[in-house]
Image 1 (cartoon, one colour):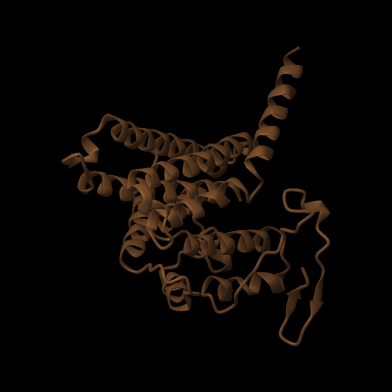
Image 2 (tube, helix red, strand yellow):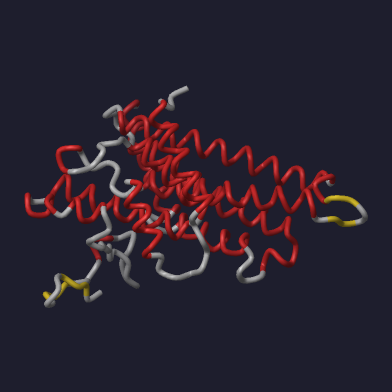
Length: 285
């Protein structure tokens, strides 16, 4: 198995935290973020020389998977810190490097503004500017992370659907005994596992220094589509209650949709995948 003991420890730590601490109060969870910072889950790719643990992409993927399995909004913050810290590590000045410890400790909050009505996927079309304020810079206006984000959501949907299917009864028996429901649950497991393997393959390529662009495109596109389809199936298992606000599966379906949109829409992922295929075909003559 490609997971090392360190990988397993990181995954289990994030899983335990997600299961015991995360809540769904729809408030900015400062206390939870402070606890996450204490565990060291923010910016885990930051090199040791700059105050981080220097973990690889696969470890980051495992953390994102387990956090999003608990609550996607919290996992999203982890992904944001990973994005900002990676940019600072690769392209930052010494002064910007010096802020990495504060960012990882959540003493300094970060933000990313790359979506507008006329821009988003077309990042070059953004018209946002920044203005200097008394406290800093304020705005006027990572594919693996999103893919594992989608997997965690899918896992949460499957767990909820499985529990519901085992306890909800129709026609005098648990709906898990009906073949149609069984097939939906089987498809959830099948697609979640396929997405996980695609993502882990892409992450391992990155960690090995190999060209991983196409692998990341495929993983992000597949995992995002999987999360939307399979959380929709989870809602179906719940029947009408699966469509009610504040039911977990309704929130999961809403959370899943964003994984088809940011870090490049899945339509754009398909365009690039096809373009690369055509390039290879042309090169082969």
